[in-house]
Amino acid sequence: MEKDHTTETAENEKSVSRNFIETEIDKDLAEGKYTEIVTRFPPEPNGYLHIGHAKSILLNYGIAKKYGGRFNLRFDDTNPTKEKTEFVNSIVEDVRWLGAEFDGEIRFASNYFDQMYENAVKLIRKGLAYVDDLSAEQIREYRGTLTEPGKNSPYRDRSIEENLQLFEDMKNGRFEDGAKVLRAKIDMASPNINMRDPVIYRIARMTHHNTGDKWCIYPMYDFAHPIEDAIEGVTHSLCTLEFEDHRPLYNWVVQNLDYPHPPRQIEFAKLYLTNVVTGKRYIKKLVENGTVDGWDDPRLVTIAALRRRGYTPESIRMFMEMVGISKSNSSVDYAMLDYCVREDLKMKKPRIMAVLHPLKLVIDNYPEGQIEYLDVVNNVENPELGSRKVPFGRELYIEEDDFMENPPKKYFRLFPGNEVRLMNAYFVKCVSVEKDEEGRVTVVHCTYDPETKSGSGFTGRKVKGTIHWVEAGHAVKAQVRLYENLVDESKGVYNKEDGSVNVNPNSLTVLNDSLIEPEIAKAGPGDSFQFVRNGYFCIDSKDSKPDAIVINRIVPLKSSFKIKK
Image (cartoon, rainbow, N blue to C red; front, side, top):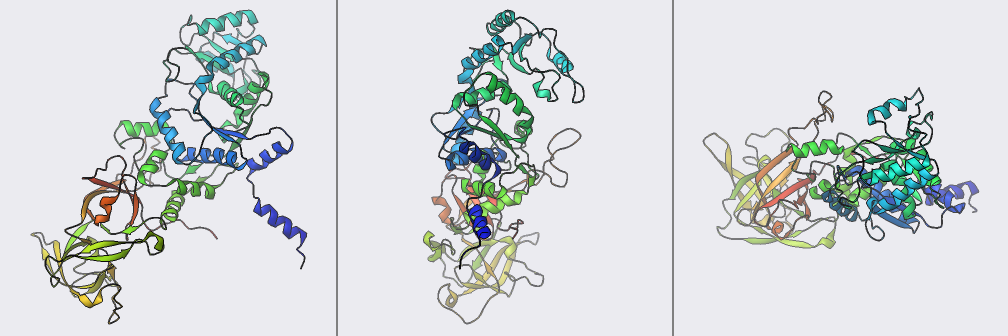
């Protein structure tokens, strides 16, 4: 039977689905504007990257890869007051960890300072830039408002020769910081305030992390950024929506500097996650006041923090694919990111037993001193992960909440007179308890049925509850850190009165006496597991040591996020 043409066309369009950026790139290629696609990720090294930056990294890298082009990593380091080599190094690590392979060497805007200076001179020679003596406050006053045009600076009509000399004097350090600026000469009556003679150079005696003290004038971002793109042959400058109003200035710069194949700026919506802190100045304050233990504290959503907590590059890429690319801002539930890491880890990681809140259990009729090794499958959903030997003996530890002396109805775990299965082992029945002076249960005594060993085919009776355990003599003690949202969601992210973060007082719970089966001793920093019934966990890469293991909970097992069908 012949296919309906409309149906066939729809199927073809579905198979080559494009987001709006790819549609524009396809059009540019079809019109012969570019022969190769070049994108870039251009962070300012003034802090650590967060989850929102991951969207830009993966978008720019993904576009370049899809079109067989190049992807550059370039630092927009035009503001030495806030930039550090520490931030440069952390960003490089983040980009590489996400799997975004950049072309050639790491690039810096500061490597192009000589060319930027020459470009500024070129604009002066064209009569399109002038040195202004107005103060920053006066420039703001002259700029006008959204409803009123600005007015020309009294220094706007200086001669080209005078501007050239003054700009050279600025470069040579003959004026104090802030005494003069270089401005583009565009239109003080423009409806777009960004086009009202923007400042493109300022005097600032600051030591630069890359160029040292070579320069005492620095270009402004809106001037430098398009030049960097043009120098590197970037074809599509992909940036977030707040730069849409800056696009006319971006185009003005590259066009008036006569670049033969000027880059094109296209804007997309930022990624907003609900109830998280992404602002660098807020994170910096949390670090400085000791609320968190650094930019990589696992409660944050910096990429370094997500990596330390145990999120994977694959889970973040999955998350970004689900979020998609759009032209309108919207917020995404953090639960979607948790869903993605669960989906990524569930088939990859072994499932081992860990007791977070230990309660001792003694099997009275098990031979004293005897240890047997049980064969346990590492992941029942993925046989390729194999199996391991787990020690079992007379004295074990179970979770505190797996025993109740006076249980409610439908409680199927351990209580006096009840029988449960010890996971991968035997049926045990509670026969008595020991208590401390305050009446708290400290030891549970049980008997076991040797006929009920897992895998033996026993069918004599059934139990309704199965609990996990660790053998007392071989268990490895560890500190386990349980994380909740850093933000107190009932109050919102920020305190409106003082601008601080509304911190959840329960965002971190530290358990110092948790016990893990001995398999954990083989793991190293960054290795992750599913702890049976407790969630996904990761060996902390910063604080953990072979003789003092520290483990972070990545996410609990259950998710509140549901995929819409």
